[in-house]
Length: 462
Ligand code: G6P
Ligand code: MN
Image (tube, rainbow, N blue to C red; front, side):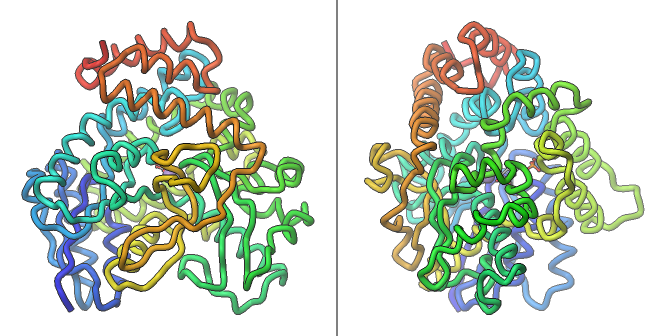
């Protein structure tokens, strides 16, 4: 076995132990042997390191572990970079949500004005990371988790090219849930392997942008089994997306929307519930995480404390959308699987061991979706192997999704322009053209409030 080095940027992040658990479970020949955590906050690094050390103590074999606040040291000669940073922290997320809601528009981490604000804060830091990678790890693959993942991946790809891959767990999570329903109902053979394990018997037809895509087909042994689900309203309303959107919409669309599309198809209902809920998601997480990162006298070990916090976080994921859709609880299976750690490991595994895998990833369009230009980063099925990532021909946007996707890409591009050139006007065009911001006057007020709330991070907008 050769040495394989992985650097996690945002190494003090709460979900890092999920990645570490996946690393410990990896028995492939080219598994990660050296893990480096980088973060700007040493207190967060220390808290996460304690969780990882506890996990390593119970494992037979574990990668060596270092943590640092020096970017160059973290990157020097590394093979894989996971980037999962959050400029402004969960407090920043809470502010994005709160400011949006104060103007009667959806307040969300990646969608709408909140997502634009998050990108405007993140891109300058991402540019510094890009320089660091160019200098210290010019050959490394970069797996981007940083949200909003589509726009951040596109910024990174412009400078670093196709070795930057954007990931999200929502599409594969949806496909797994649907497959489980079909299997449970005896509508696909029981011996079809689980989706998270990857299989050449299963092909997904999925297209869109990050947090804005649709599953339009699910091929098992060459046959599309999604119509079997679409015929059965009773089955549709047994899994997360089916309950969120309801059978009538899914049957009319002949596609299953990504869960984040709830903010578009049910904006009025989501906004109404968010307006009356006592805390935004960001505020809840900021308080919860403070408890995890700062509290050490509760008699729990670091891992126990982390696991308890994680469980509570998963239970409340997308709670307001579920409330708007009739208040249902999440399935146990959805709370156990991390998801994004598995996608990340699957990419590394396929590249390092040269074992092909098909995954839904954020990559440059290069002619796949007819409505978008070649450099547009899109979320589509790709083949990953030792030679890198190749989009699979044939992905297609459903007709009902074309307008919204073209518009969302325009918004992303204006967001990038604002961050890359410092243009306040471009930022205004981005916010004002977002379909969830219903007035240009409101867009102007939102931008003023965001710049006031993040005086340091957004001072560059002139
Ligand atoms: C899903 C999305 C991620 C997002 C996360 C938010 O996993 O795919 O992009 O960051 O949910 O979850 P949270 O617990 O932070 O609300
Ligand atoms: Mn995501």
